[in-house]
Amino acid sequence: MDFDTNYRMTIGGDLVDAPASFAVLNPATRERIAEVPDAGKAQFAAAVSAARTAFKSWSLTPLAERQAAVHRIGQAIEANAESFVALLTREQGKPRPGAQWEILGAAHWCRAVAGQSLADEVLVDDGDRRVVTRRTPLGVVGAITPWNFPVLLSIWKIAPALVAGNTIIVKPSPFTPLCMLKLAELCREFLPPGVFSAVTGGDDLGKWMTAHPGIDKIAFTGHTETGKHVMRSAAGTLKRLTLELGGNDPAIVLPDVDPKAIAPQLFWASFQNNAQFCNATKRLYVHESIYDEVLAELVAYTKTVKVGNGADPDSMLGPIQNGPQYEKVCEYIDDCITQGYRFAGGGRVDRDAPGWFVPVTLVDNPPEDSRIVAEEPFGPVLPVLKWRDEADVVARANATRYGLGASVWGRDLDVVQRIAERLEAGTVWCNEIHQYSPDQPFGGHKESGLGCENALDGLAEYTNWQTLTLNVKPAF
Ligand code: NAD
Image 1: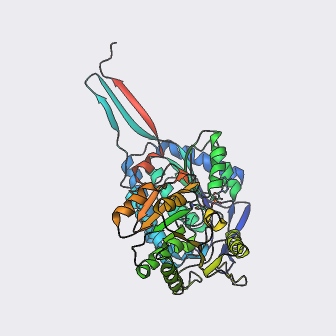
Image 2: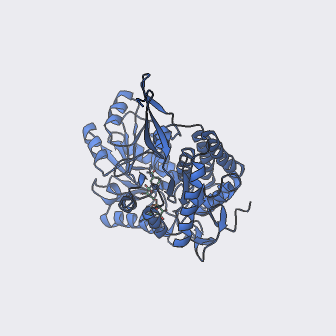
Image 3: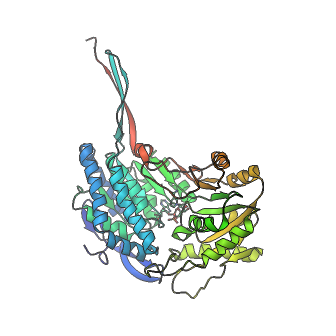
């Protein structure tokens, strides 16, 4: 299959263009790399109608067949991994190792989720009555995804939705729609028409999806503010919701670590995917006794990391993915300059660079109420902060409306554990970071989300409870 041209939507098993289109740019060069369909309302309605029709038979398809189909999605990704990796780098900007991690991770997730199922639960079976709770599919799922991990975060929705017996329509971010259009096209070979559709358009398409009465659930990943719009709009038809939203993850570093040894791990905790990562460490709290050394080691390590076009084999970090996000990250840097905060590294953006490049920037102990600490920059600008008192640093770490992830780093495991248990976050990593698994529930506390993805808890979010009771000895 040609991955370089001909990007069309998959609707009801057909490849479809739209009367209008929009451009997709390579963030490393700002050059146009594709035109993709800009779906109209009628086309979206056709996708919903096809998905509803397909649901009738897909929901009755035996579980083993649905699992096998999801397994095949994984095989299709793997068989075309090279093309997906190259395309992901072109549209998203991430260098090859990150693109490979995402694409092979997506294939791995399909295989793992294909092995999951939700068993019926027998509550009563006493010879007179039998009461069973079972899980039934919801209907049509609308998946709305962001641009930072466009393939993996879509698979986190597609795989469980289909295993559970739903059909799905995916609306990728308009900044990174290409891999998803190609994946849906590939899946036409083995999925019945309407089971998995991909439609492309702007934010309005997302709004149509959240309001449409033919959609039963929205699985959304994106900004907290957008998530609130989604929730309000979905309320009209009481859609089921899974919301994976923003984060401002703290990392707490104890005084007993070796600054040189830990610096690379802390660096990647913050800057993986160019910090365009919901779970990036966005506030790094280092104990005051080792603060200067850790900061110096971070600065030294930063100098070994090449930022450049993701297609260059020696690039370790790519560009900011899109223009609006680039402007936002530059605004955070400007704010630090205006406020007189000290940069330990970075801080100067070359606005004439061919792509949306921002240097890795370390801000030296800015105030706790500064924008760079309190908000989610979603780019490579990290505030490094001093702490002295354990209770105080825990309070500072928790003083946010977000609650997505957190990490604690130290050799005294009792202290590490004690701190970890006090952090208000969906995932707290201790002496490691960004370990995800199809068997590990993932979701946010507070305004970082609602519900979870992955594991059987995540699978259950694609189902309704149904309680079946049977009087075994009817009196008639
Ligand atoms: P975004 O909210 O701008 O967009 C996400 C998706 O929502 C896009 O497809 C967009 O077109 C669509 N959309 C925009 N407005 C909409 C509306 N009113 N109704 C319906 N859909 C709408 O987010 P983004 O900039 O693409 O992604 C970055 C954000 O995502 C960050 O806040 C990041 O932390 C978060 N994120 C969270 C997770 C997680 O798992 N919790 C993972 C990745 C990213």
